[in-house]
Image 1 (cartoon, rainbow, N blue to C red):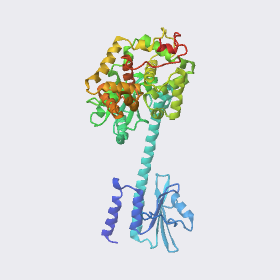
Image 2: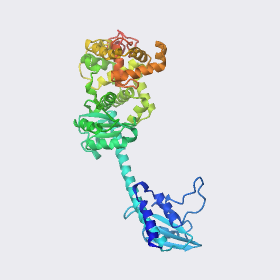
Image 3: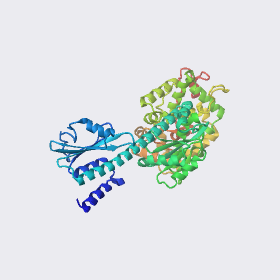
Image 4: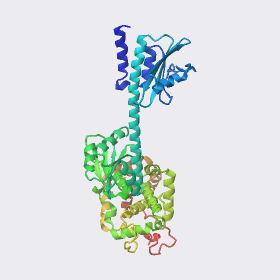
Length: 514
């Protein structure tokens, strides 16, 4: 063996330690080729980590692995157990080396088996010894990395579980789960929710940046429903500025934030943040907060709105509190998102979401397939968040929905909002009205107004930046636009509640019909 030969194989082995080349199988294959041997590597459980590779497009031959026919199986066991560091065996024209590979210091170990038909000379023995050391480094690093990733996944799963508990208003359990790893994180009555949207392929890195930006003083969750979203629940007022600074130099990244809400109203805050995110897409700084916009509920008579809400949702008062809260939280999310996405957020099946919403439909005596109904119930659910939990507040005579929508301030708001569409030469307003009346079905709307369905879709899509609201997906933005059309009488009032006795005072049917 010459000095040149030594430096060549050493350089090749060192190359396999470079970050781009760190692969246990590559090292095993290199060893096999370099010493002209069959090589296998097992972990501490006996499972193969690497073994002789078959030729391309050729099945692995059904032959024993190196060491399969050792005369004494206890020899390999002694090496793995550390009673001996390595062993050699020869017979029947075979020469073997068994080397212990320490996977975790003072604990588990694997076994490297090298089999040749020729005896091991000094060069081959040195290469096996050095390769064993390289494999030991790689396997320890991989095990450490794997453990770290498992811990990261466990922490991510725990954060998601906490968020799901908050979404169904179970703040007691959410605080209990969070206390172990993030003491004090949820020791608050109110919190804000932010949604950060970036490129899907960069979400993991974005989530880590959010954790760093918030100093781990916020609940950072990879959204289970939207692959590009990171959800941040925070008790700190300064978090908004921290996140704005984070996205400032990140192209194609947007931030939507909610108003501060009671912790039990996390689902409402999340809906607000998603709604604000839609506005952020049209802003130069790519950020928006829900409170920056006037919302129709704020322009209604507060006492009348609360009375209407209480009367509409009164059928749920007959249920146990935890059941009622579960149905309300699920319906709130089900109106904001698809059943599939709501199910992912809540950690239940989509059939469960649909079953809960169907039960609410039955209790309220209404049909969620109509956009006007969904908008009205969405208004009630968001108002219900601010109602006293014990129901002891004084309740004036229930108002009708058309009375609530008839105030001058609300009419001005609706006319100003929809009036933005009149500046476009295309009939965006007419297409949007027909599309809403058809329940968001472009084909039916197109038949009604005598244009192509694609024209309706393009007009609705063009209306989004003008109104600064998402329309093609369900949620607060869409329901606000529906309410604006109800205010201007461009849509018929929704049918809410059983109408067997609509004239009865306080009966849900009296909410609309007069």
